[in-house]
Image (cartoon, rainbow, N blue to C red; front, side, top):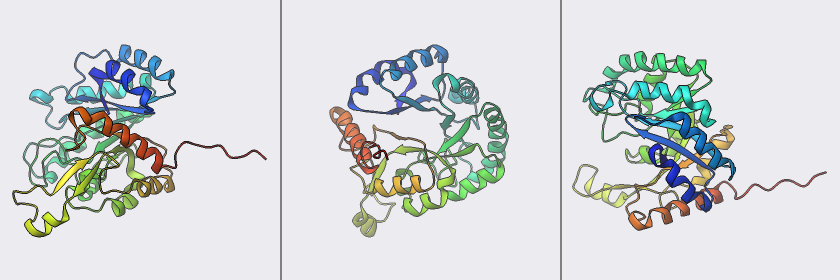
Length: 287
C-alpha cells in the first residue's frame, strides 16, 4: 500500500524489488490531488514493469462527514468516478461510524450513505470493499469503522443488499480479537474483494496468564512471513473460491521490521507471499 501523495516518488524506487501491484490510499480526503494527472503519470511508469494499481482507498469517516472528515463522502465519489483512469474497478476504505455510538446505531446512516455510493459505483462497474480494522473501537464505541466483525458484516450487507459491496480482509484485524481467521475466510470468501498482506502474532502465554485487559501486550501486527498465519492456506482458500484479486502488503506496523528495516521486511513479505502462491508462474508443456 502506498499513499497517493507519495506514489510518484515511492513507487519508482521500490518497483525493482519485484512488486506487482499497489494499493493507492488517501487519508480522510483526496484533497487537491489531480487524480487525472496522477493516473496518467502512474500508468506510464507501471506499464514499463507490467505492474498495476489494484485499488484506490479512502480512509475516513463518511458517516459523520464532519470536521476533518468533511470531504470523506466526496472523496469516495471522486475515486469512484476516476477509478477507470487507474485501470481499477475497486474502491476500498472504512465504513465510518457514528462517533462513540454502538454499531447497530450506525447501520441506518450506513444504509443511507453507502446505499447511494454503491448505486453510483454500480453504474460505473465499480465494487466497494470495507477494511475489517477496528481502529481501536469495539461494538459499543469508536470513531472510524463498523466493519470489524462478522456480526457487523451481516448487518451491513442486510442493510445494503448490493452485489458490488464486500470486504477488504486481512487476518491481523481478526486475530487481535482472538478470532481464528482461517474458518472465517472459508465462510466469507465470496464477499472478500481485496486482501491486505498483513499478519499478527498472538502471545498465548500472556493471554493465559494475564488475559487481554492487563498491562502486557498480547498481540502484534506483523508483516507476512513473520506472523502466525500460514499464507499458503490463505491463498489456497482464496484460489479454491475463484479469487482473482491481489494481496497488497500493508507495511509500517511490524514491531521489529520497522524504521531502517521497513523495506527489508516488506521485500521479505513479497518474496514469502510469492513462495506461498507457488512461486513464479510456469507454463505447461504444449501438446
